[in-house]
Image 1: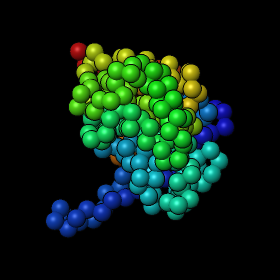
Image 2: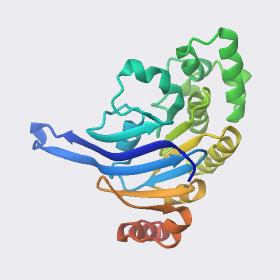
Image 3: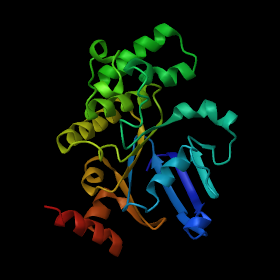
Image 4: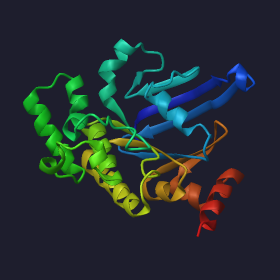
Length: 260
C-alpha cells in the first residue's frame, strides 16, 4: 500500500441508549484499525448495524469518536475543533446512500454542486466554470440541468449530482456510503462504472461502505470486514473473496451466492 491518505487507529465509539429504551450503551465501533492509500479503494463491508456508517461519520467528524486516532493526509483530525477542521474539509467529501434526501430540494442543481466552492469564497466566474465542468464529467448536461431541482431528476441523475458536489473541490478522499443501494438495479451499474472512471481520471482515494460484496468486488483493491463493531478480517480483494479466513466472511460470501 502507498502512503495512507487516511489512517484510523484504535477507533472506538459508543452510543447511549435512552432510559425509555432500557438505558445503557451500544458499542458501535470497537478498536478499529484501517488505512486507505493514495488512489486506492478500500471496501468496508458488513451487515446492517455492524458499525460501517459510524466509521464513515467519524472520518468526516460528523460524529466525534470516543477514543482512537484519525489521520487525514498526515494530520491528526481526531479532536480538532471545528474552526481548525474547516480548512481541511475540502480534502474529504461524502456521497450519501439516498441521493434524494442528501440534496436540498429548494436548491437548483447549479447551486447544489457549487456549494463547496462558495464555502471557499471562489469567484462567480470560477464557480460557474467548475460546476459545468464537473457536471459534464459525471455525465450530465450542464445547460439542460443546472436550473432544475432534485424532484425534477431521476434517481441516477440525483446521485450523479451528489458525486459532482463531492468532487468539485478535488478531494483527496471520497467516502461513499452505500452509493447504489437506493437506486434501481438498471442504474446501479452505470454509477459504479462512473465511480471507477472518475477515480482513474481524478486520482482520489475512496472508502466504500457497503453490504453488497458484488459492488465491493467490482470497485475495491482491499476489503475490510466488520461485525458488531469489530474488524474481523482485512486483506486484498483476492484474499478476502478467494480465501476468506473468518467464518463471518464465509457467511457473507455464502449469502451472496445464495441470492438468485
